[in-house]
Length: 506
Ligand SMILES: Cc1cc2nc3c(=O)[nH]c(=O)nc-3n(C[C@H](O)[C@H](O)[C@H](O)COP(=O)(O)OP(=O)(O)OC[C@H]3O[C@@H](n4cnc5c(N)ncnc54)[C@H](O)[C@@H]3O)c2cc1C
Image (cartoon, rainbow, N blue to C red; front, side, top):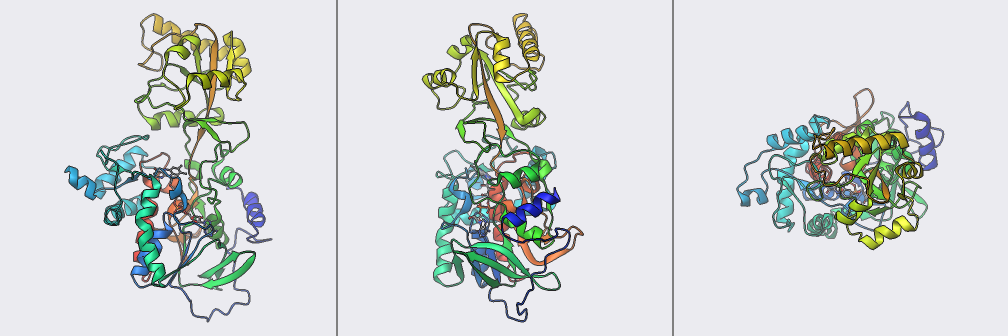
């Protein structure tokens, strides 16, 4: 992590000025630390993790204050696909599926090659059964046919993956009545359109509360414990790039995912980790060069749904992966090794005419218009060399890749990369290329915590009274160097609930 950049981000956010990241900030100022904490738990963020934390803490008898930056409840559940994974669920039982948290743990670690945090992974898979069954009891239902082994990511060995008919919103709908009941009883007080901007720390370095800001006014809220559940930083291009070492290519995360909780933890001596575990999803169509860009179409690269007709090359013109490799992880990891995490899908007129749509709902007219009207990611040319030059691909490398691909196909020989689906050789009519870019929906860097969700300093000591859950912990800790099925929504819900249950003892 670059220290300079973080000083700048902290100062730019108006959180602190002239601070040093080396030493914890001690914001005792003139506060009277003998004052009694007004709240047993202050939850920062009423999202996927914050809602169950607040509900279960309130049900356990705690006085809970929730600080929420927006006017809404549910955070990223408004756009998340909401796919969750867990063993011993009511849906597995209905289908007679034998499963256990141990098997879930082993399967999760198999998919991400043991790159997620073992203690946090174990904790969330152990908490997942009770959490998902609680949601089922609150009215959460799953799609017909669920649970399944996988959808869009490498599958589990056992069917333990499901989502509701309204995606993430189905989960919010299940939690909202309980949350509102606790608000009505006065056990949860929620402050909307209010942001946590600073932690209050006593002379021992223990967190004693939070400074919140609303309408330009700041106020102290004192609490016995503070939970950072403010989500990730995948809507903050500067912070994302600093923590992951790659640009944020798309604006796919909720705009509230600014990483403010990460800065709060840093400000009291917490440490961030996991940015190096970033891996891109295998390519999407950007609507322009300026990043983060919008997504213009969904690239159909899952060979199970649409076997590839085209070849995929990097900026050197080289094919870098077996395009029809069944593992999403394999293809994602291959893209992660390519310059700029970019690939070009290269094909000819014959393939354009014969193949099913490469871009989800795009019809042929729209594709033709994109080539004709100069969509920035689309290039068409009469010769392969001109195509390469216009698209920004090395012409020699591309020529060699096309020749090698065609030679093996025409000779009936095995493809050099082992590709099986090779319907047509390349070279009939005009040449076409569409540039796709690696992307993500979440941030991998997050706050370092122990297995009780207590925020840790660089020396391994806890920051007293400070906890974190959800994407604030980073996908690197929960999902690892991979997109492991349901690991983010499930962990946010399960660890949020875990925190709430233990709020009075933690
Ligand atoms: C398009 C998309 C699809 C996804 N699909 C899946 C999926 O299928 N399965 C999966 O496991 N994961 C998925 N994810 C990831 C997953 O949804 C998120 O990681 C998870 O919902 C984050 O939960 P959270 O509680 O950490 O954050 P959020 O749910 O975003 O909640 C954070 C809350 O904190 C508030 N907040 C932020 N800053 C402050 C502040 N300073 N003060 C007060 N409040 C603040 C925000 O307004 C927000 O309400 C997806 C993500 C996206 C974007």
